[in-house]
Length: 469
Ligand code: ADP
Ligand code: MG
Image 1 (cartoon, protein in one colour):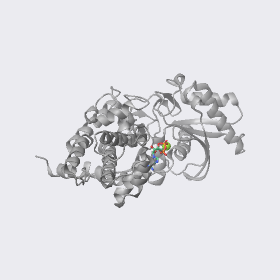
Image 2: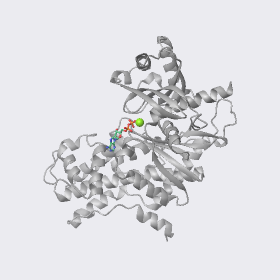
Image 3: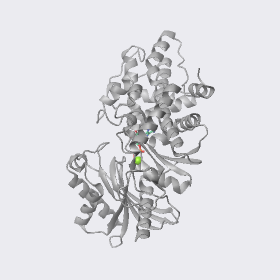
Image 4: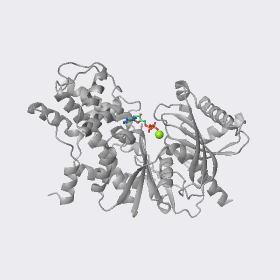
């Protein structure tokens, strides 16, 4: 017997039934997609596993969650002032930013985007970091600030092991980067060396962080209850404020810190097999088509880089089984990566509005002229895949809220998937509330944590330094 709250949870996490006139076809499709649907019991099981992996990670036991210490022991307090540089590497664009802070708020921002050639992303690290340093100098000189000492916060959104706030050892490259000789090296030192070799500016790298941490910090300037940072963009990751006494990995001397930001690195959740029981045949194919097979298991269920691909794989399967687009077949739909996550948002918008317009437009790109049933099926597939992503993210966030035991937590979120998908936010609000009814939380959108957040982290780093001197 299910207890009442579990029944409500179970019923609430279901998606609308597929409504087709052909009952046999409807049943076949529903059966094939059952594997994508999580029951409340499965949700609870994932919560237990996530809790256990977090605890293992924080106690330095083998775990798929790195639970990395960021050494950021305090949030902005409104005193941050001055000019700061931010370097953002690891997002869609490589950017250099100049930010002016007054009373902890960004009052001026100059940004320049730079292109990084494919060969720089995959050759030796030396030319890559030389290029980064060149872009920094170029930007600083164009601002006329070459003679000013400028603190820089380096947003390096890749998994790293941190020995301090300004030492970040690259664990592995992800996304489109792969310079083998940088792995196990300190990205900050490489940048400092390259800047020193040029010697044409007075830039001082004072902190390294990732986009998730920057998002939490930026969120904290918008809402003082912010204690979780979340990225739902190309990839996915989260960080949170942990009690300092619970954190075992802490290399420099402690100075009475009460809390510290922990970078969960949840994209890799399940890389040790603990989530295999939810892996569907579609996920296996998605993984096989990816750049780094057998890694970033959790990210592959949810993030922008993969959600469209999961939908594509399911649509192709239905097409091959003669359940979809029976009047024509589409060659271009067979190409991995062709169905981007932006399309999922568009089709989901139609479902929300009860119309077909975007769905038809998207399918036209694949030379498909759908009939009414095709449209319903495509919309259903997008709903099922999106809904699973929302539920998985909510499961981890609810577990995190329980773990943190705070009266009230604001979750600062950034990333285009979150921003543009029409239903993720409302599903997440609903599911987190159902999974942990007693916790008070709020989701806010923190704009550009990897830029603004980096400047604020640099200011915090200087404040900590001056206090210790
Ligand atoms: P990054 O994560 O690289 O810093 P973004 O947060 O802008 O950058 O995320 C970009 C990713 O978000 C794209 O790769 C794509 O997967 C996803 N995305 C972009 N636009 C949309 C959209 N309209 N709907 C859903 N996902 C989107
Ligand atoms: Mg980003």
